[in-house]
Length: 338
Image (cartoon, rainbow, N blue to C red; front, side):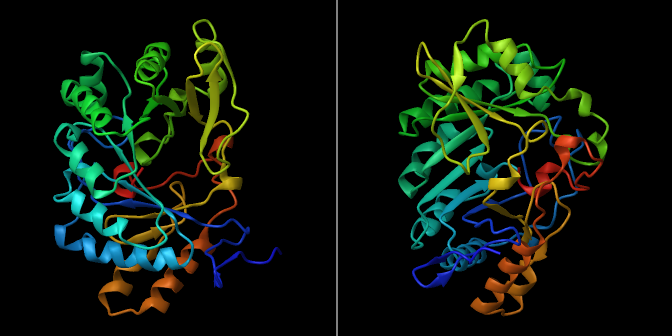
């Protein structure tokens, strides 16, 4: 077994497979103003009472302890994080924590027209915007809402606020939006931003038999070759889940998140904190440590550290979904924090 990594005299958080955990994805709410077909049932979900969600102070306490264990990157997710009231306040509180070098957020973009500038001023570093289609009617079908104009306005406001480059995320579903790959890529490139295509993952019991919707990276690349001169990216962040490619003609980048066809578990540095205070080692793994009880029962720093280490030790070597093994989270994506 390799020696545990040490930084400034502290044993950094790592799992049973010697992977260092440096990245915490925090779901700030289960609520969402969309009802995306791959994320939530049309009728929504039974939401936890607001009192059961972690407060900003509790989230900050978790991050402060995590930073002492080597966490340096935070990503705010949901649900939809921008529906959590006073979100810029939370960003500012996390920004003040020593050791946190980056605060990112994944959003559907519908509220960015009013929040992009306050979030930037509070210290948010980067934004990923979910954008599965550019077609209004298709957008209504995918999100079961009519917010595409608001999303596009939010894109403009995010760019104006200085969030450059943006990253756009599209979940690609066979027979639904897989004919828009080129249009989405061009949309991102025109804004000096990166498009990232995500292989559909059949999360939740209701979608466990929909694996035929998955379009693999290899197939996407074949479709894009006719319009874009793409070559593999020579350098990149080993912990980035996106496989990077570059257009030789323009230098624009595109990423593929290959959770199904070629998972990236070997370099995973992530852990998740649910809105209800569960520390989860993996999006696809039905395991978590109840951190909320530790926090609300007066647990000290050592007990919070212990919760982090217990969660890290639950982490699998790999989620195995690329082999289509029938192991699916019983919780919907929106309840976990995608």
